[in-house]
Image 1 (cartoon, rainbow, N blue to C red):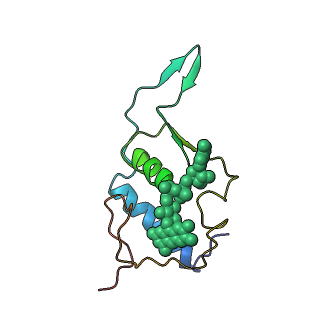
Image 2 (spheres, helix red, strand yellow):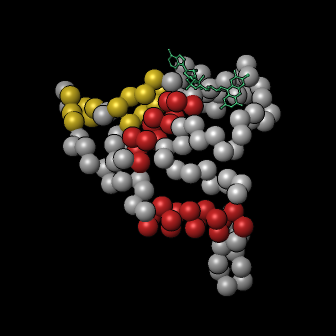
Length: 115
Ligand SMILES: Cc1cc2nc3c(=O)[nH]c(=O)nc-3n(C[C@H](O)[C@H](O)[C@H](O)COP(=O)(O)OP(=O)(O)OC[C@H]3O[C@@H](n4cnc5c(N)ncnc54)[C@H](O)[C@@H]3O)c2cc1C
């Protein structure tokens, strides 16, 4: 349920999500899909299939989508929500890496970097 002020404006998380959606729209992110659709024996064909939806697989998938290659899917051997090491064998409550470490940030600066 979206929380709103008495004037109907979204507040809290809903307001942040609305702002983010507008910012991404202004930046034209993700780009419009530009790869022509392909068919094989009458069935649609994916442009890219990513095997493994852990950290690198999700970063690669997001990069494809951001650049307008949207007919992409990531498959993982683990059940949904159990991809990567975090909720299975790693079982880390907190990330050890510092916030300033960019990693696979897709050319976006960390949003909460300390100054
Ligand atoms: C205990 C621990 C603590 C860590 N702490 C940090 C930290 O603080 N900061 C940090 O930056 N990094 C940390 N790391 C490292 C980080 O988790 C890894 O660098 C990162 O997850 C590697 O990404 P990846 O995509 O290569 O592999 P993963 O994230 O492991 O993803 C691989 C995926 O591929 C799937 N897969 C494997 N084989 C197949 C197959 N044949 N078919 C389909 N799917 C398949 C797996 O199910 C998995 O979901 C930690 C790692 C561990 C184990």
